[in-house]
Image (cartoon, rainbow over all chains, first blue to last red; front, side):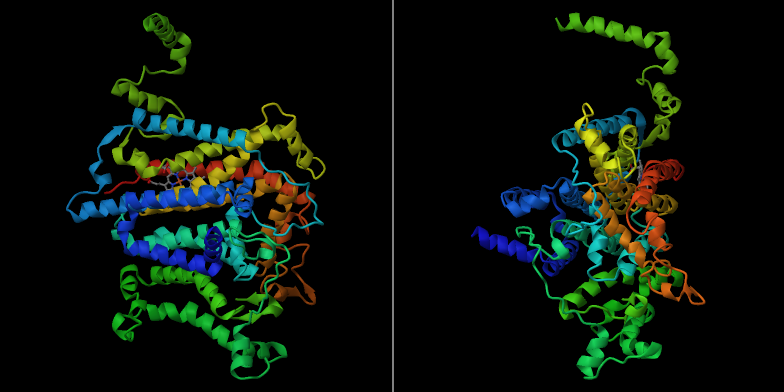
Length: 373
Length: 266
Ligand code: HEM
């Protein structure tokens, strides 16, 4: 019985299943907003806590989770869940208020109060509590120190610090120039651009979900799934050679996973036309990659234009693609910057599913100049 | 009975707060009247970061989660404990590791390293949560767009501070984490040896970008993680990045005030 449960959890933690479940779960929670209630939060936290505590008896789980430097990840899991729930919960309560012709809570409490004592005491209390937490944590748990540095002996797995493991996880799907350089830059630029792209005047200064659905769904998908989930799975579920291991699995260094990855060019030339890949020189390389180049170009440069068309230009079934109202509301510049950033963000899940479905390695591959997408 | 203990205590307290020393430090009386509540906020350099009065909803824990404040407090804790660590730590390949061992084994009440390390982990988490709260309350919307941008830079600085500090113990965990992290720089377009298009930067037959001058070399100060890297990261970690962060925090807090205080519905 227990073994069956463990097998099930190991299976469900696999990259494909976990990512899909988490994404669908999040989308469902946005659709059925009653789940952000106090009762479901309590149930959820009890289940999570019981699962966590009970799992400590499994030696493989314990080994990974109790590593001193992995403690923050447990913190991330519980804190991020809690505060996401808290923000959504308050937002939905405010939405109910405004639906019932009431003012949002933050508006009701608009009167001015003295900062001493109302705020200063809260801050002092926060400092005292935090100091105690830090002291206890520091007394109970020694900071890790491994063997002295030895440049000749690289550990397996070699992992970046935990907060960068989302980026390291991206390396599975993209080359370092994208995962390590371009995407981090885009994350920073994209975050900074948010206030200038988002022209929705509503929801400024109070929690709400209804008035800012699109913004919140996109941001939380990025933050919770593409960032936090990848950090957590990168820490707990990636073992030697960056292979996937379930939470109850032993990190076997010798496990080999076959890599059968193929490029778009292989699909087109070899599988479809039954010919060898074109070789020799620059133009042959362009010939070889034309389909991939077309795909990337269409995704980045044609799709945003198409998405700006009004709904009636789309065939039935594709009407959801139309972002015409955003184009109208935001104006051309904001719209194109915003949609481009959004499409770049979505390229990660898209590439993930292409990999899982077709073993696709590169859409465009110019290994000669390290330009692979 | 209780009175017999408390009475002299409160007399002593009164004596102390009426003394010339006390009144020279705290210019105002006890913050029990509204006038003194205003004075206490204005005459204290630390408290005057705050306004005297504030909208009730904005200072509720429910709204800010105090996350920005907690992040700032952790930054102060890290500055203080980091200073103490600097008394013992020498950033050389020869001594670094031994100094860390010493810190843990020979320094009395030696939990400074623990406080510093766990505090740093905590700060990374609280800065994420602060960003989450600011986003979820729409507080980046006008007039606070610029302060959100400052915040993003602070987020990056927090991660870089953590990253540079990770190398300093000079153990296996440290150098390999930094090696993995900095390997990415090799792939910088145009500027890394294995980056797209870098090979096209040539002067006649000589290629301009090589392992001795590319982006990764600039980060590490060497072709692989070594003594120059340790020194570089040490200087950035103890001087450069904290200064930049402190400077931007000053701007950040100033702008919170100037943008109209903690956000609230119009
Ligand atoms: C070292 C990092 C940071 C520190 C010490 C810090 C500190 C603070 C503090 C003390 C406040 C006052 C209100 C509160 O506590 O929530 C605040 C507000 C604010 N922070 Fe930060 N912050 C940091 C990083 C960030 C980041 C990463 C962002 C966003 C990307 C950000 C954006 C803002 C904005 C827009 C406000 C105004 C919020 C409002 O008026 O409701 N900050 N910050």
